[in-house]
Image 1 (cartoon, rainbow, N blue to C red):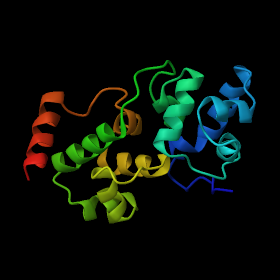
Image 2 (cartoon, helix red, strand yellow):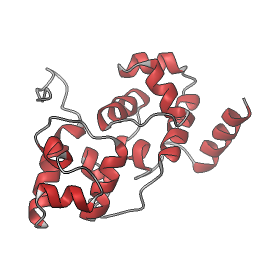
Image 3 (spheres, rainbow, N blue to C red):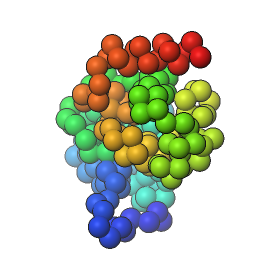
Image 4 (cartoon, rainbow, N blue to C red):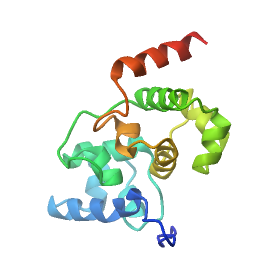
Length: 176
């Protein structure tokens, strides 16, 4: 079982309650664990692992479950924003948002990784589209960058800066 304890002086990350949000909504909508897994195109035990806090899901898994359940993936994963369903972003958009915010703060991958408590290689793989982050990693990165985890992961909510500025930063990064 994953550690769900409170760190003294800090509130628990939003993804800690993902299991209870998932179970409550699944039950309300009349899905069994296996029927929800099947409807989302996942292996039979995935929902059980998440609800029992034995696994931390990747963003694509949360997006699939949220789509079947009719809720916003940012709300399901982090409890942020509106519960209502909104368009889910592709992983490449997550990578672009991460890279743009990191560049806006003039942080190297190593500096961001150290601040978030993740491996530098993880940040690199995410930004290059070679790896997929789980909700814990996304939340750590969002906290280190001072942005909403739902916005960073799924583009939900308001951006920490104008879309034009983000596009300019992204274009500069592509040119490098």
